[in-house]
Length: 464
Ligand SMILES: Cc1cc2nc3c(=O)[nH]c(=O)nc-3n(C[C@H](O)[C@H](O)[C@H](O)COP(=O)(O)OP(=O)(O)OC[C@H]3O[C@@H](n4cnc5c(N)ncnc54)[C@H](O)[C@@H]3O)c2cc1C
Image (cartoon, rainbow, N blue to C red; front, side, top):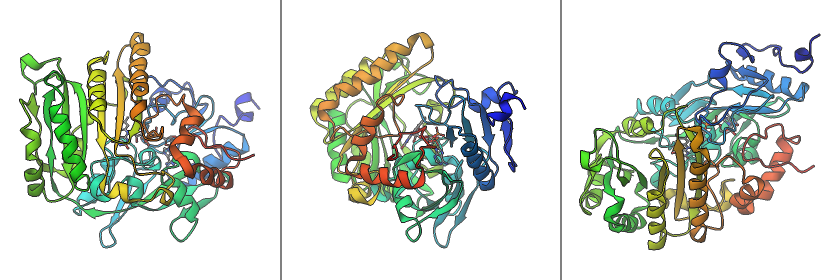
């Protein structure tokens, strides 16, 4: 028996999917994730075909005492989907979505991307809140919250999660819903990939579109903060109708005039959560706040809106380091700080954003989901994005410094755990972000994963 066999790194009994081992042609592609900085080497990649494969893989890992990482859409910037040496359970072969239009439920396999959910549900005129980029994984985004355009009227992704099927650390398939394993369903609503491999999600659907109003006037940072202040005031009033962010970026490409190329700009991007014509009228003043550098506004299909930002963020091209924190309010001082940080970004590919909350998102009590407190008014995110490894240090420093500088405006020190840097803030940030829900999460973790088999995530350690 060779050493690979004794370590369990040759194959998995009863597995019908694909086993990808170091040295095989597919290995480097299979271990790559969205952030080009992540370069980890699992001992074995188990690309599952169905939930029986997931059970076999989890049992195998337990029998050989292997660490497990779980790959959904592979978008996590900290690279939690990939582990060194252990077993990577790859769900990219499990992307089926079925829609029950009568009961307005989407049943979604654990490796699906938001594009899969959006297209299937929109074919019935329905949708559930996802993220802003269509090739993000449903699993990772949902399990830590899920902030998208529809949050004003329909809340976070977790607020629409009605049930899930989960393979737990002991290899059992359990269903979590309001009637069975309610504690597990509660924990999945924000507690991340800590509790097992979710093989199926069930989401509530809502009638959306097919046409929605997208408003996106673009102003130059050098022209001052007035448009952002006006946008802030409008979002405070209409947070129950508009999902929005003010996104700082660098003008470039054919959509911008020659004179504006390379300027630092911001987009007041909004999706009206209702009738397109109503939204167009309500949001028109945002397009009249000064001289626009460009304007991407228009009525468009919901699926188009969901894919508008995809080309800004192609998988595997960029090195990335992201941070975010919730803000209590969006003061003029915080707006000025965000403008300064945008101007000082070393890379033209980096973006930073101010996100509004309110409406249905804010209505959910802190104890109702693991995600916790919803009283934050805003979020500030800094997405360092660059290409040359020689620029790693200064781009990481930009995200971190910007994040630190915004601390005085933070909301109880809480951060969105889906924008995690490289996870180096670890336990302290995780505890603070879960707030009063942390202890209950520890108890549920201890019940479902007492040996911390699922630890490549914003980890909640079980009680020993
Ligand atoms: C380009 C881009 C755009 C983004 N936009 C948004 C946005 O608009 N809104 C937002 O809220 N977030 C957004 N995010 C953040 C995103 O939500 C997180 O990166 C999330 O972790 C991605 O999920 P994934 O399944 O693609 O990631 P993965 O890297 O595959 O997984 C992330 C984590 O989830 C766990 N996991 C994955 N699948 C499962 C499963 N089936 N069962 C249990 N655990 C699992 C993994 O172990 C890992 O810990 C964006 C990220 C990127 C890169």
